[in-house]
Amino acid sequence: MIKRFVENLEDQMNGITLVVLAAGMGSRFGNRIKQLEPVGPQGELLIDYSVTDAIDAGFDRVIFIIRRDIEKLFRETIGDRISRLIETEYVFQEKNELPCRSEDFPQRTKPWGTAQALYCCRNVINGNFAVINADDYYGGESFKLLADFLKAPDASACSVGFVLKNTLSDHGTVNRGICRINENGLLAAVEETKKIQRDPDGIIRGSRKGSPVTLDENDIVSMSMWGFTPDFMERLTESFTGFISSLETGDVTSELTIADAADREIRQKGYDIKNIPTQSRWFGITYEADAELVRQALKNRT
Image (cartoon, rainbow, N blue to C red; front, side, top):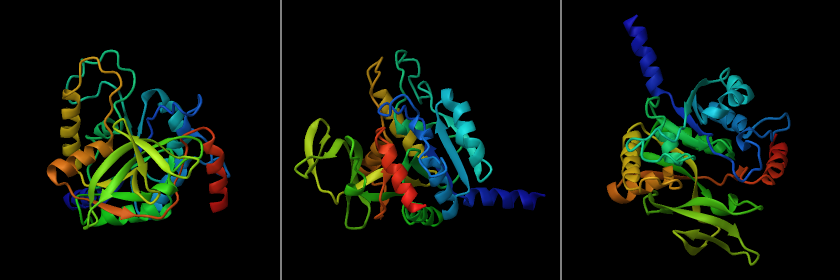
């Protein structure tokens, strides 16, 4: 019996987990929950494609980070179905789950960003894991690249790097982490850049820290498709603690992203995050009009 227990523990530690960020408010998508928008020929959701690709790549566990108020709908719409295919767990992102000062922001109504979402998973992460968005389509190749890294990491973490021109929306601006890659193929920086779009003159422009920037269409961007070893959770907690500690009491808008936390570790502590390039075309639902384009793209790929 002890031998079997050890073997089961080893299997658990050797497995790889997919963490799905599904707690977004979807403020640019009308009144519906974009993560639960049917887009496939048979009414499949983008999460269906991601989880299927992840299972095919070798992932054996999925953790959905959701809001508590959509738990019943989420389970009925996708969770109960997915749980028949892969081990499934839920984590709730709630505004008061903080490493410090949890009583200092009584007027806060929105979550604290993707770093907090992942922080909420700190008690259920027990092995190498990936992080993705629920409302993005990454493609099977990207999941295979990610799984191959997590099965035998040759760096502390990885980011699947997409080409900027493959990640734009025709219906409005998007936010992206622009990745700077060094000569060793490691991330030198992840620069959070907002309001990115291709203007009528063909030039891609955005805003970084309130200042306008011009971007190259071949820039490498993070689409929140990360691979980490468990020690990142301690680093994330430290980074998130520092972020919360620096805020004014009553702050209602500030957020910290995983990209922000990763960039801090790179710049301040030499954390090595490998860039894994992919030419995959990204599809996502940022705006309501994006949904029909995604449906057509998935129909052509089915």
